[in-house]
Image 1: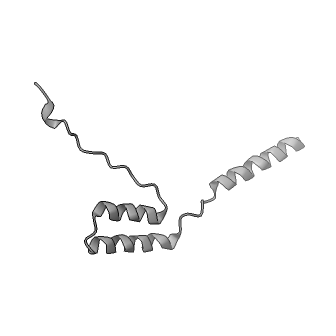
Image 2: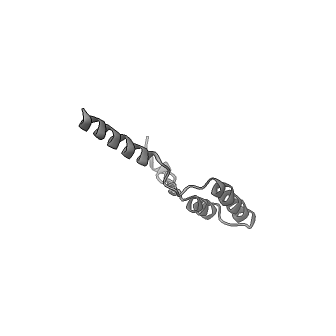
Image 3: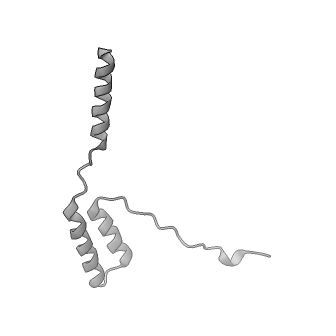
Length: 77
């Protein structure tokens, strides 16, 4: 029984460690990064590069943009 309690405590403590935030996200950085994004657009920056810089500033993974369908006119009836 004693071993079972120790194992349970160890598992719970490890689970709590995994539940903690990684430290990359900062509550005030969202507003700062959004302001930089708006400034980039206001100064005539490329919207995609401004968006990439925003995600990089937030420490997030950059989303992948799928290309449009290139074979639209190839369809045969």
